[in-house]
Length: 109
Image (cartoon, rainbow, N blue to C red; front, side, top):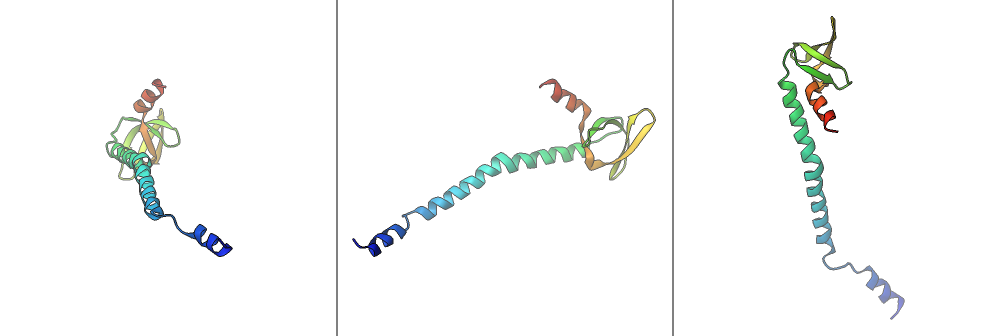
């Protein structure tokens, strides 16, 4: 065999290599969807439903870690009492969780 034949044999593509590559790519996307994208979307829906169901006198925690009690709810913001006669206005989207939920999750650790 001469040099030309050896180099042509090495450059020949493997049979079925293209379809296996596509199957692996599709399989990786499906795995990423079920283990990463779907749970994140589910969690975002739960948080959105929680924010819609906020009520006056409910204990909550903000994204910054401030604990307080809701005193007034408007369209886009909330008046939160963090100490006696100390009230702050925060955006509704910065409310993270109910204080009772946070206490329950710490107790299980």
